[in-house]
Image (cartoon, rainbow, N blue to C red; front, side):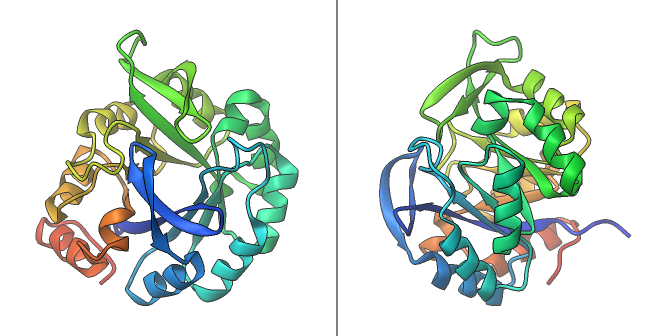
Length: 254
């Protein structure tokens, strides 16, 4: 039996509120994270992702109290990211109720942190949060960004994702910074390129606008599809996305 395609709402949180913009700019309020988490749990989300998008930029830890409250409202897997630097951060977030933890800037600053975390907790716990954009100067044409997409890491995205998976990351959350919030469709070329070089589960993020966009992302190689604004503002429902995936022949949890 094929593994079901996961549909995952994302809570981008800053200053205690869920926000969403375009290319991580012009952020507008989307609601209370705890209320949204509970609603998505009831509406059939397969998982939930909570990203503290200002933690790395501000040099602080993820807002753990908020994570605890969100975890207490849902009974689906919860992935938490933002400001994760090492074993102690992962341990604290797991104790707050997270099932998986995303790492981005912290892993780039100290790649050995990946192995330290997965040796302690297992690779199923650690998700590489890869904020990538098109950079023609890079060998693959795709580069890595950090600090909520505000800085170039000077790394080729395909080289970095291969290294991170080799070091132990058990899943990749691929967010196209160019497509983020545009609702013009996922970056299918980027998804396909990453799919060709790693074999761990791949979550596609950035650009969803129509139900058909999710189908195209899965055809390009995604094992899961993540979106924010189209769910937060009621443009699409999780049920509509799953129905479109099912019509296209992909297994989903209805």
